[in-house]
Structures are given as structure tokens and as C-alpha cells.
Amino acid sequence: MSYDNLTKILAEKYPERFATWLLGAPQTNVEILKTELSIEPIRADSLTFLKTHNRILHLEFQTRWISEPPINFRMLDYWVRLYRLYQMPITQIVILLLPPSEDTEIETTFEFEQTRHQYRVVKIWEEDPSLFLADSALLPFATLTAQPTEELLVQVASEVGKMEPEVRRQELSSYVQIMAGLRFNKTLVKRLFREDIMKESVIYQEIFETGEQQGEQRALQREKALILRQVARQVGEVPQDLRSSVELLSIDRLEALGEALLDFNSLQDLQNWLEMA
Image (cartoon, rainbow, N blue to C red):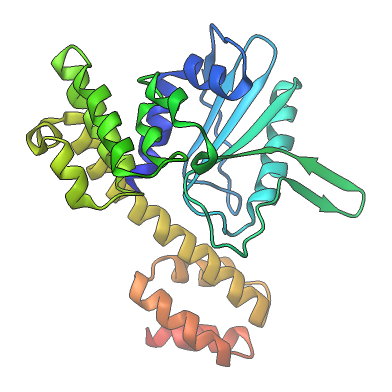
């Protein structure tokens, strides 16, 4: 959960630096758009919308490629919503932090009949670490780039150590350690970064505390939405009163409902189960 918070924090704290990196040319006066587009069932954990002088830049950070709904469909849906609002060119980029399994196809288009929508995918593990080592805004991502070695981690720690003032160094140290946890053994990370700096960082605490709470809520909402779709597929459209009852269930009861609904033949079966739950 903390990775989602951190990627959004970094992109919104340094919008010009991220836009320059991803668009391949210097960008100034980049505006952060606080557009709310996460309407069920199309939603994502970490979205950032930036606006340059002539373009919308839509960034979506992902640690896993497989999702529901699929990423390629989500990108089409977001494009339509953004274009409806702003009616200007839109560049969409999925920033994939970790490689998927070898047999996974990383798609860059959505295609269905006459509809074809294209977007970019940046695979961090294929990026040259030198760019990230040279920019403090991008430095936390350096540990995920093309050289996942202890030597690279030492280089990153060295760059963090040069940062002044101390409060900025503590903040950057926290960011780097969080991202490094995706790729490196935690014991190794602790050995190279002073643990007292990590614990003292207000930013570190905020990311983890709020991230865990928000992550649990998002997971529960996704579970409810998934169960309701499965119920509808099994027995037909679910009336609002029964939907409300399902939404009040705990995560344990939702899991139990997920197993039980395989035997449902009608809405009455659902109602009977809810009355006994």
C-alpha cells in the first residue's frame, strides 16, 4: 500500500521533473490536476494527472500488471473521461515498477472491433539507472532499474548521504528505503541506510500509517464490488436492499459469500444466506 502513496507523492511534488523525464524534453509550469475519475468499477490505486501548456499527462503507477478490469481497458476509459473534460491532447503512461512473470504479455493497446486505443508502458527495470541517480526527484526509483545489485544500492545510499539539509536527507532516505523494499532484502537495506533516520522521518510514518489504512479500505471495497458482480452473474440483478446488506458484510463474511454463491440459483438463495449471516 505504501508504494502507491509514495509514487503519487513524488509525481505531484516534482511534476516538472516527472514530465521532463517521460516526455523527453524540458517542461516548466506543469500543473497538477485534481481530477476525480475513479468511479467504480474503473479505478486504480495511484493516478496522477499533470497538465503542460498543451497536453494532459496521465501517469499510472503499477507494481502488478494483471488487474481487474484490465489495464488496457482502464486506459481507454480514463482517456475518454479526460478528453471529455479538457478536449486537448493526452499522453498516457503506465509506469510498471516490477516485471511480471515471463509468460505475461504487456499490452500497449486496447482493441475491440473498430476501437483501437494506444498508450505507453515504461518498464522501470529496463531503464538506465544513471538518469535516476542524477535527479533526487527520481532517485527513489533508481533501485528498481536495470542493475538490481548491491553496488547500485550503495550508489543510491551515497547520493542520499550528500543531500542537504538534514531534514531533506531524512525524507529522501525514507522514500528510497520504501522503494528499495520492492527489490532488495530488507536486512541489506537496513545495513546501508541508518535506521534512526528512517524512524525519525515524519513522511515515512505518514506514508505507512495512512497507506495501510487506505489500502485496507480499498481492498474491502474491491472485494465487495467483485462479489456483487459475481452474484449478479449467478442470479441476476441484485436489488438495492440486498446490495446494501452485502456491503455491510465483514471481509470474512464476504469470503464465505463468495464460496456459497456457487450454489445459488435465485435471489431468494442470496436473501436466505444473508438472513443467516
